[in-house]
Length: 246
Image: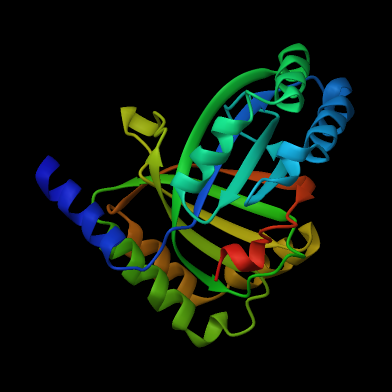
């Protein structure tokens, strides 16, 4: 079973031309400290090393995180993991990087970190999207998940979908979830507003295609819960979300 799972995971990855990496660094901070966290990030991003970042950073605030103690996260977008690692190696050696780390030590407590490979996206990629549903899950059959998502997105019921959907593989930093399973993949669904998200959700729940989709994933996917996050700050001068998802 382990060999089959590994084969299917590798097959899914090799089926696409990709390199885009997004890494999440979750932390817990008191609400009263949130403005100071945002200010510290802004100061760092205005420094030479911050401006040299060949990607983007999003400061996300967790609106609903379930059992996770994380209140915020830094989400880093890069064209690939090697580019991210090369840039991050320069940060600790810089004065700005050292000051930022010292400030964060006082303001927040690290919770978890994980890195993902973007496999495919659907809908309309938009820099205007600020609210994201993040659903982590475990599957031993990623090709079945992909097929189900492709079928859903091709259905006429999805013609007016106003948001964006991304399917990513969690390559590093998998976390324990339901029944001791680990996260293998994650769906991210973005909307411009809560109103847009609710309106679409109310519509989708009336569509047979949505029920068929959920049924097709029964027994294939073990969901780890869905979190709702929002962008509190974005620095994307070298890579915005629309570019990242191309």
